[in-house]
Amino acid sequence: MGHYTITITDTQESFRCLDERSVLQGMEALGKRGIPVGCRQGGCGVCKVRVLEGSYSKRVMSRAHVSAEEEAEGCVLSCRIKPTSDLRVAVLGAMKKNICRPQAALPTASPIPTP
Image (cartoon, rainbow, N blue to C red; front, side, top):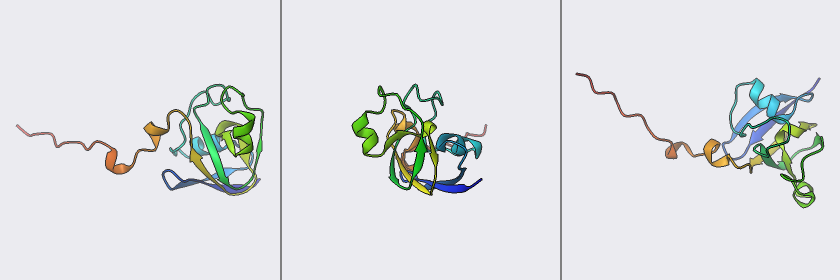
């Protein structure tokens, strides 16, 4: 059983993933965030990423979410790939804006006034 480092370029967050788990399962198992999570079975397309560096094995992906042309360019569903080396990925899924906001864009809590 091997481990590989997955780096999400949008957030610069990294996590270790067992080679027997999908990239999405590896992220979830460690309680990490960065790739949006949907159905976990390739049916919704929410976890779509572009692999920028590294190699992986893949399972069949729905053409409704990843065209053959996109797949040839490294676009995949993270729930359908298992790493075979360290990977660098960029998030493309529909929920990207909710997960990959810069820290400065997050609302800050205002202090609760004391009576």
